[in-house]
Image (cartoon, rainbow over all chains, first blue to last red):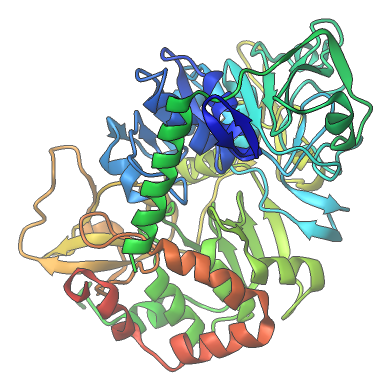
Length: 262
Length: 282
């Protein structure tokens, strides 16, 4: 736990708050499963009330009061502006170029923000079979830009991906352009320790801010490649009291809803 | 012969050993009761097609019903792994399982191509990723007008599609409402279609003039199975049992515990076991 004027907060709360801040009220956001869902809904409940949240189940403009366990909970449909079929979602709305930001997570990431959620080890004889890509391969190419949020560890931030499930910046500058991709790709990676952004020249992720109390050494020891740091590394502003309160209320409502169901 | 019949009859008439079977429902309306009936009738060598295999295919795979799986996201949503799927892929238990893996966009497009009676689907996808290296059914096609390179996957044409829906009217027209997923496409892409419903009513009471309705003549058999989507859910009838999805993790991790659960809750039960989970039982 860390202490500020707003009180104590965990590394996970810090990560969710900072990830939420990346979103704008004008965004149309395709919400990936897992950590992104908390960040996207926190943004909607704080500084970005106008944000349109879209889940791959077809729900457009959803405003859930509790966090869904799956991407297709009834709460998402009941609070949505409209719900379309899954083919329509992927064809008209994602491939149609109507999504400003896709928010993803993954089991593994490399220095060019390519993601693996498919397999550890050989594909034909996997050590660990992960769930796979789902919507992510086309979210990564079809949204105007991509934010990523995931906790940092040497097992998740790796030198070499076993499998590229979702394409980030490939092997560096020019990789996306070579594939004919006109979208920006990953522009920000928010972890529990720091924020990284692709270097404008090389497209390699560099640390642009460290969370309060986190040293360069601590960030490096949680990363499987030799980290680069921006020439000006700032300290990430800590969560404010309202951000923490609204995030905790959201988690409490979610826990209560799951308890009451049984 | 009436389109309405028992679940036992609907499955025995329409699902055969070696069939390609699609049980669809995108988190919502997953046809669990029908899947359990397929397990009880000991169908073998199935090719199972589903965007998100979910617990229902974890159960079918663990019971040895499938030789092959076509899918795009094989996890327990919000919880973690599908342990029976993983055990089959990583260790070949209870027997090896061949997989054909896609993205959601590819499978949604492939169902739509199947419904449209096209041989393949074309879309902008799989850019820069590794799946095309391990799945020979992912290919590219050049646009004849712009010369853009686009992804192509074969249309999905199941022998039988199985879905769950809110209700059928007296003539067997079926209403699907809420998160409608790919069910309409999957039904229209298939040779035969089996539908389970929460209830049979005189009038459908469709919520609007453009509701998703499957005309009776697109369906092979309908069985009334209240609660038949549990632990998935039926919008307007009962909610998703998120706690069951969490409880499934320890049950499915262990082969023996899984087999005991299946024995007690599937093999020794029938469709009436779902009644307690339906709207009338809550």
